[in-house]
Each structure stands twice: as structure tokens, then as C-alpha cells.
Length: 349
Ligand SMILES: Cc1cc2nc3c(=O)[nH]c(=O)nc-3n(C[C@H](O)[C@H](O)[C@H](O)COP(=O)(O)OP(=O)(O)OC[C@H]3O[C@@H](n4cnc5c(N)ncnc54)[C@H](O)[C@@H]3O)c2cc1C
Image 1 (cartoon, rainbow, N blue to C red):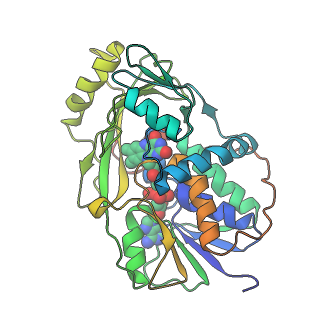
Image 2 (image 1 turned 60 degrees about the horizontal axis):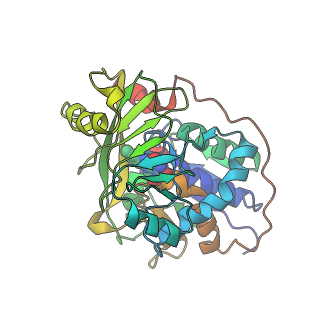
């Protein structure tokens, strides 16, 4: 195949990263996004943290792609002008087992005598700016982005990249592939006009979630969250009870929040594979033109560049020369800070 026609379905951080990686290899690519803008779903409603992978299970695909993305990311952030602050994270509690885990993943950590674990490499970004910058860079390399372009019938292309987040199982089924199901796992956040902590404050993570964190934003706010509520349908509202659930945990970690009134609240929906399915980054076994980049539940912002590189390999395009990134200021997202953009558009603020 000399010049395959590639369509990417989904304009979140995974789809835009894939479009950029393919466009940089000189391949024509069209990204189809159902909404009227990029990054309105999980990619614009997360914690905005670029994780190191210190707590990820060694040997898993998710971990491998997080670690690979960490190698690729600095040049991308710098060249595309995406803001990032390497503020570090701290986890109070018995960090010994996680320190071992971090070492197995080659991630730098400092374990205090009281069990406190410091992870210097964790940091914060603007996830909307990140996604918009990847999209703009893809366009600069010749990609086209179609908005209001919901894929609701089989795509006519040589290679179809399924990065449709919550819609990925439906897109797969359109192509005869029913290998997995996706459901939303809601994460709710409270935003405070309270001076932020210097570092990201982490609880000890569980198998299901990283738990409620307290973290600074680039615009000087303090955010606490997320919750983890499994849903069967997309509901972007913040439940009334979320406030109490979050505050109880957040105040224990950051007493400055005691008595503080949230200035804003937002929710994000993690595209979660049912029955523990996570990180479906593979070629479809029933439709060889289809490559899944789906069920990227909780670390996709961090791992996106690694996922995209893997997709390029799966598409058989890895031997093509990669053009250098083009420098440019990332486009500004209209409508205030990233953490309120989706809620504002959905009329939830
Ligand atoms: C509460 C929460 C906290 C998180 N915190 C972090 C964090 O701190 N760090 C981190 O690395 N990750 C975090 N994540 C995970 C990260 O946000 C996701 O892994 C990532 O955004 C997934 O990106 P995506 O592109 O796969 O999905 P999405 O961003 O959901 O994008 C999918 C896109 O596909 C489009 N689409 C769907 N169906 C169709 C269709 N049929 N046709 C066309 N377009 C379609 C949608 O409109 C959407 O724009 C968090 C997620 C949540 C929800």
C-alpha cells in the first residue's frame, strides 16, 4: 500500500495524538469528531496530571505506554508550547510497597522514614491546550479535522483508528467487532479559590481508582477529586452528595480546604471497559482495517503519545520517516479555564 487513506474516529487526546503521529509520517489522515470542538469529553474533564507511572503495574501495556510517553513528551510539550509544571506529588501513608513498584518501573521516588512517598516527576498541564495543540500540529502536517462528524456507519478507508472514547464500542460494532463494551465511570471534582498546595497530594490508590487527590491548577486554583461512580449512560452532572464525599477525604489531606466553599464543580466520564478490560490498543480480529485505541480509562492524557506510537506500529507505518514537529503556540480554548469548558458547553454551570 503506497499511500493508505486513514480515518481517525474521535477528537480526544488519543485521537489527536494518533492523527499527529500519522500525519508526521507523511500519510493523509482525516479525523472525524462528533462534537463541534476537540477535547470536550474525557480529555477535557480530567485531573490534568501527567503521571510518571510510579504506581502502575509493571509489565502491563498501560504501564509500558505511560513510560514510553514520558520519553516522547518533553520535546512535544516544548515544541508545541503546551504548559506543564513539574510540581511533584506526595503520598502520605505506607509508601514502601509503591516505592518498590516505582523502582520496578524505573521511576524516581523518595521514601521518607515515616513512609511518605515523594514522586518528583509528577506534574500538571492544561489537558485542553494539550489536545488542541496535538490537533493543530496534526493539521500543520496535513491532517484534516471534521467537526459534527459522528461516525454512524462503517468507515470507508484503508485504516480506521477507533479512538472514540465512550463511543468506541459502538464504532467497533459498526465494523462487525463486538469484542468489548465501554461504560462511563464518572469522576466529580470541586474547584476552590484557595491557594493551592505546592505538590499534588495523593491518597494510597486502589485497584479501581487513584482515589481523591488534591492538586493545583496552572491558574492558581485548588481542585479536589475525582470520585468514581460507575454508570450505564452518560450523565455529566455532579451529584449533590459528591461534595461531602470529596471534602471528607480532601480536608484530611489539605486542611486549608476546611470550611471552604467550592467555586465550581465539574464531572468527567472515564471510558471504562466492562469486565476489567483496559487499554484495548490492537488490531481488530474481525476487521483488519480497524485498529482500536479504546478503553483508555484513567491515564490517557499521560500515555497518549505512547498509544499513538503503538497505533502507528499496528498500522504498519512505523518504518516511514517521521517529520520534525512544527513549532507553534497552541491555540487558546475560548471560554475560560479548561476545567469549566465542558460543563459550560453542556449548560451545567
Ligand atoms: C475524572 C477523570 C480524571 C482523569 N485524570 C487523568 C489524569 O490526571 N491524567 C491522565 O493521564 N488521564 C486522566 N484521565 C484519563 C483521560 O482523561 C482519558 O484516558 C483520556 O482523555 C481518553 O481520551 P480519549 O481520546 O480516548 O477519549 P475522549 O477524550 O472521550 O475522546 C473521544 C472522542 O470521540 C468522540 N466520539 C465518540 N463517538 C464518536 C463517533 N461515533 N464519531 C465521531 N466521534 C466520536 C467524542 O465526542 C470524543 O471527543 C482522567 C479521566 C477522567 C474522566
